[in-house]
Length: 181
Picture 1 (cartoon, rainbow, N blue to C red):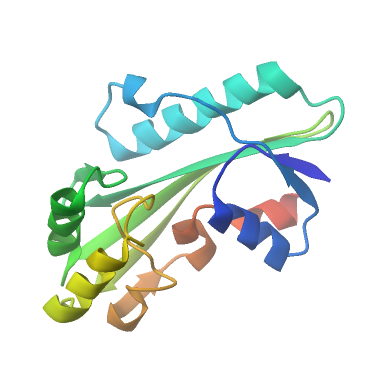
Picture 2 (picture 1 turned 60 degrees about the vertical axis):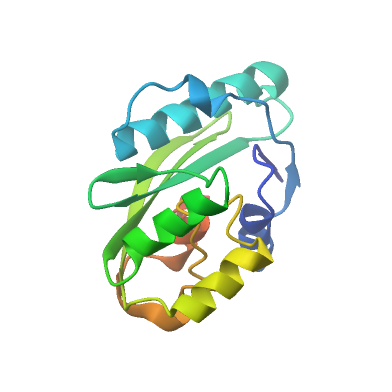
Protein backbone atom coordinates (compact mmCIF):
# COMPACT_ATOMS: atom_id res chain seq x y z
CA UNK A 1 0.00 0.00 0.00
CA UNK A 2 1.27 3.47 -0.90
CA UNK A 3 0.02 7.00 -0.25
CA UNK A 4 -0.70 8.86 -3.50
CA UNK A 5 -0.03 12.52 -2.74
CA UNK A 6 -2.28 13.83 -5.50
CA UNK A 7 -5.92 14.73 -6.01
CA UNK A 8 -5.77 13.58 -9.64
CA UNK A 9 -8.42 11.02 -10.61
CA UNK A 10 -6.26 10.09 -13.61
CA UNK A 11 -3.25 9.20 -11.45
CA UNK A 12 -5.52 7.13 -9.23
CA UNK A 13 -6.89 5.33 -12.31
CA UNK A 14 -3.36 4.56 -13.52
CA UNK A 15 -2.48 2.95 -10.18
CA UNK A 16 -5.73 0.96 -10.15
CA UNK A 17 -5.12 -0.25 -13.71
CA UNK A 18 -1.70 -1.54 -12.66
CA UNK A 19 -3.17 -3.09 -9.50
CA UNK A 20 -1.06 -0.97 -7.15
CA UNK A 21 -2.81 -0.56 -3.77
CA UNK A 22 -3.00 3.03 -2.57
CA UNK A 23 -4.84 5.62 -0.57
CA UNK A 24 -5.15 9.13 -1.95
CA UNK A 25 -4.27 12.28 0.00
CA UNK A 26 -3.59 15.43 -2.01
CA UNK A 27 -2.06 18.59 -0.66
CA UNK A 28 -2.33 22.36 -0.87
CA UNK A 29 1.03 23.34 -2.43
CA UNK A 30 0.80 26.65 -4.32
CA UNK A 31 2.34 26.14 -7.78
CA UNK A 32 2.01 29.87 -8.43
CA UNK A 33 4.88 30.36 -5.98
CA UNK A 34 7.28 28.80 -8.52
CA UNK A 35 9.19 31.44 -10.44
CA UNK A 36 10.85 29.46 -13.25
CA UNK A 37 9.31 29.16 -16.70
CA UNK A 38 11.63 26.30 -17.70
CA UNK A 39 9.24 23.34 -18.15
CA UNK A 40 11.51 20.63 -16.63
CA UNK A 41 12.54 22.85 -13.72
CA UNK A 42 8.94 23.88 -13.08
CA UNK A 43 7.77 20.26 -13.07
CA UNK A 44 10.49 19.20 -10.64
CA UNK A 45 9.94 22.21 -8.35
CA UNK A 46 6.18 21.57 -8.24
CA UNK A 47 6.66 17.88 -7.47
CA UNK A 48 9.29 18.60 -4.81
CA UNK A 49 7.11 21.28 -3.21
CA UNK A 50 4.15 18.90 -3.04
CA UNK A 51 6.35 16.08 -1.78
CA UNK A 52 7.90 18.21 0.99
CA UNK A 53 4.45 19.37 2.15
CA UNK A 54 3.01 15.83 2.28
CA UNK A 55 6.16 14.25 3.71
CA UNK A 56 6.00 16.74 6.58
CA UNK A 57 2.31 15.96 7.11
CA UNK A 58 2.32 12.16 6.72
CA UNK A 59 5.94 10.97 6.72
CA UNK A 60 6.69 7.47 5.43
CA UNK A 61 6.49 5.41 8.63
CA UNK A 62 3.00 4.05 7.90
CA UNK A 63 3.39 3.72 4.13
CA UNK A 64 5.51 4.98 1.24
CA UNK A 65 4.68 8.35 -0.32
CA UNK A 66 4.28 8.94 -4.06
CA UNK A 67 3.90 12.45 -5.49
CA UNK A 68 3.81 13.48 -9.15
CA UNK A 69 3.22 16.53 -11.30
CA UNK A 70 3.01 17.12 -15.05
CA UNK A 71 3.43 20.05 -17.38
CA UNK A 72 3.17 20.41 -21.13
CA UNK A 73 5.59 22.21 -23.40
CA UNK A 74 5.18 23.22 -27.02
CA UNK A 75 7.49 25.53 -28.98
CA UNK A 76 9.52 25.97 -25.79
CA UNK A 77 6.55 27.39 -23.87
CA UNK A 78 5.43 26.12 -20.47
CA UNK A 79 1.76 25.18 -20.67
CA UNK A 80 0.12 24.65 -17.31
CA UNK A 81 -3.58 24.18 -16.57
CA UNK A 82 -5.86 26.52 -18.52
CA UNK A 83 -7.18 29.43 -16.46
CA UNK A 84 -10.18 30.04 -18.72
CA UNK A 85 -11.69 29.14 -22.10
CA UNK A 86 -9.50 31.54 -24.09
CA UNK A 87 -6.37 30.19 -22.38
CA UNK A 88 -7.40 26.60 -23.21
CA UNK A 89 -8.18 27.54 -26.83
CA UNK A 90 -4.80 29.26 -27.24
CA UNK A 91 -2.98 26.22 -25.85
CA UNK A 92 -4.83 23.83 -28.14
CA UNK A 93 -4.27 26.03 -31.20
CA UNK A 94 -0.54 26.13 -30.42
CA UNK A 95 -0.39 22.32 -30.20
CA UNK A 96 -2.57 21.63 -33.25
CA UNK A 97 -0.37 20.21 -36.03
CA UNK A 98 2.68 20.59 -33.80
CA UNK A 99 5.00 18.60 -31.53
CA UNK A 100 4.05 18.65 -27.85
CA UNK A 101 5.90 17.14 -24.91
CA UNK A 102 4.38 16.10 -21.61
CA UNK A 103 6.88 16.16 -18.75
CA UNK A 104 6.03 14.20 -15.61
CA UNK A 105 8.11 14.18 -12.47
CA UNK A 106 7.49 11.70 -9.67
CA UNK A 107 9.03 11.22 -6.27
CA UNK A 108 8.53 7.95 -4.42
CA UNK A 109 9.97 7.40 -0.97
CA UNK A 110 9.73 4.47 1.40
CA UNK A 111 11.88 3.50 4.38
CA UNK A 112 14.12 1.49 2.06
CA UNK A 113 13.97 3.22 -1.34
CA UNK A 114 13.73 6.59 -3.01
CA UNK A 115 12.99 7.26 -6.66
CA UNK A 116 13.07 10.64 -8.35
CA UNK A 117 12.20 10.48 -12.03
CA UNK A 118 11.49 12.93 -14.80
CA UNK A 119 9.96 11.31 -17.87
CA UNK A 120 8.96 12.90 -21.16
CA UNK A 121 6.50 11.71 -23.77
CA UNK A 122 6.44 13.64 -27.04
CA UNK A 123 3.49 13.68 -29.43
CA UNK A 124 3.33 14.89 -32.97
CA UNK A 125 -0.26 15.97 -33.54
CA UNK A 126 -2.17 16.30 -36.77
CA UNK A 127 -4.15 19.55 -37.01
CA UNK A 128 -7.13 19.48 -34.64
CA UNK A 129 -10.58 19.75 -36.21
CA UNK A 130 -11.99 23.19 -35.29
CA UNK A 131 -15.44 21.67 -34.69
CA UNK A 132 -14.09 18.85 -32.50
CA UNK A 133 -11.86 21.29 -30.61
CA UNK A 134 -14.86 23.55 -29.89
CA UNK A 135 -16.88 20.55 -28.65
CA UNK A 136 -13.97 19.59 -26.38
CA UNK A 137 -13.70 23.14 -25.04
CA UNK A 138 -17.47 23.28 -24.47
CA UNK A 139 -17.34 19.97 -22.55
CA UNK A 140 -15.00 21.49 -19.95
CA UNK A 141 -12.78 18.38 -20.01
CA UNK A 142 -9.84 20.61 -20.98
CA UNK A 143 -9.80 22.17 -17.52
CA UNK A 144 -7.59 20.64 -14.85
CA UNK A 145 -5.32 19.18 -17.56
CA UNK A 146 -1.79 20.45 -18.18
CA UNK A 147 -1.73 22.12 -21.59
CA UNK A 148 -5.51 21.57 -21.78
CA UNK A 149 -4.79 18.26 -23.55
CA UNK A 150 -6.13 14.80 -22.94
CA UNK A 151 -4.07 12.24 -24.89
CA UNK A 152 -6.32 9.39 -23.79
CA UNK A 153 -9.38 11.34 -24.99
CA UNK A 154 -9.67 14.39 -27.25
CA UNK A 155 -6.13 14.17 -28.69
CA UNK A 156 -6.15 10.43 -29.46
CA UNK A 157 -7.40 10.67 -33.09
CA UNK A 158 -4.84 13.38 -33.86
CA UNK A 159 -1.72 11.51 -32.74
CA UNK A 160 0.57 11.16 -35.74
CA UNK A 161 3.60 9.93 -33.80
CA UNK A 162 4.48 9.30 -30.16
CA UNK A 163 7.75 8.71 -28.31
CA UNK A 164 7.39 7.63 -24.70
CA UNK A 165 4.80 6.11 -22.39
CA UNK A 166 1.15 7.14 -22.49
CA UNK A 167 1.10 6.89 -18.68
CA UNK A 168 3.72 9.67 -18.52
CA UNK A 169 1.42 11.88 -20.59
CA UNK A 170 -1.47 10.99 -18.30
CA UNK A 171 0.49 12.10 -15.21
CA UNK A 172 2.45 9.17 -13.78
CA UNK A 173 5.09 6.96 -15.44
CA UNK A 174 3.73 3.77 -13.90
CA UNK A 175 5.97 1.52 -15.99
CA UNK A 176 9.06 2.92 -14.22
CA UNK A 177 7.30 2.96 -10.85
CA UNK A 178 6.09 -0.64 -11.06
CA UNK A 179 9.54 -1.84 -12.11
CA UNK A 180 11.01 0.01 -9.11
CA UNK A 181 8.39 -1.40 -6.71
